Length: 225
Image 1 (spheres, rainbow, N blue to C red):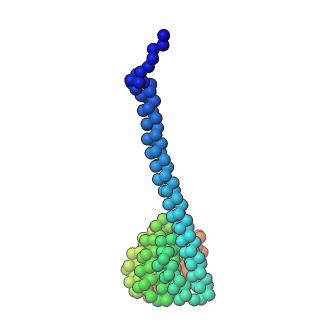
Image 2 (cartoon, rainbow, N blue to C red):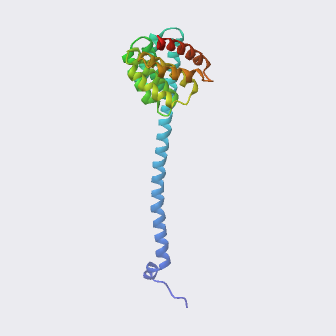
Image 3 (cartoon, rainbow, N blue to C red):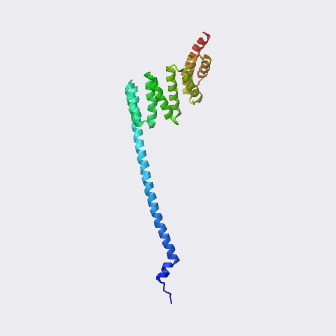
């Protein structure tokens, strides 16, 4: 005759107890998984929204930079400078904003406002980051402001490092001309002739090479005179 299970037996049945524990474990972790999924969804949505906003900001900055370049093309640097100022105030952290810093510095330099130009060239150097071309052009611009103010020692300090470090043959030739010119201003003619000779043999920037040969001839006259 089959024995009858009491309620006490059912309560203490190991199989039933294990099954209950499994159910409790599953319910607990399902809740945890749902919470985690919710957090992940919120995070993904936040990233999408941030990227969308960043993309819109980049697009707006790029449009403003293009308009500033159009102003320059029309011969209106004041309008370009005003547009760039607004751009830097609201979109200075964008990729186009970093280019705008350098463009604004160039405009100030061409207007003879060398102190303001040097401030923005210094900002462009910091903003250049992993963009060696932008950074090197800004360093050359900063050296030019020193040269224009008659501070040839500081100009040479920047240009010597830049001349040694730049990987662009075209830019290196232009920097070499700047460096040699400042050497001449400091009466370091022999150093100037050395740089002119190097630039004169530059196979890439032939225009700079030709100018270097002319400047070298002038420097030799100064030396003999």
